[in-house]
Image (cartoon, rainbow, N blue to C red):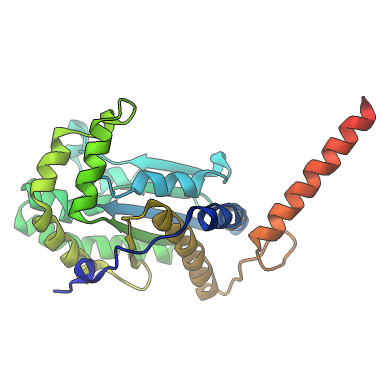
Length: 276
């Protein structure tokens, strides 16, 4: 079994000034990518997994901050409802898939079968063992059917997680995020790492690769996720014989998009002055 988590460099970071400069550029490029995918009727599925408090929600927020809200939906996944247990475990995810041209973001996903359900004993060994092949077939069917899948595992050290738990506990506006279940899961850290490593080994495929993100520095993780999302979109478009371009058919450039936006603001301001 691999040791990807053990070998992940969690010390990577980015300074505040560089973060905000890159963030704006990448968010404009993400907006352009969204418009390109819509035009070409290609669906994008982003999967976020990782330890509790690893920064999944923060990364998702930065991806969606500037894109058109009509073109994406975020699915926070928790335990299945009683009526959902009457179906195959994949059923509830089928119903949440985005339309072609739309973006579907899963804050936890069908990988719960081989993670939490495995560790907590909610699935038998036979059930979670066969789930790897079921998931691979599911994802292959989607990518063959005009979807792009990008899967992220955001990872933090056990020490960093503890600090974030304590920060949440002491912040009245964030305390709701921390549950007894989070503390219980923390006690099974090593078991979750073993489950994650086997998951990477058995479901990391070229059509739906796992991308491990060092998460101790939140800003670095958010930039890395944005950069990698754009990189993966471009890669999978090229596999389909398509080249990612802006609305004018040029190579996407977030800085140019920002400059054009500023020019539009100035023209609008100048026009408003004349009409007064």
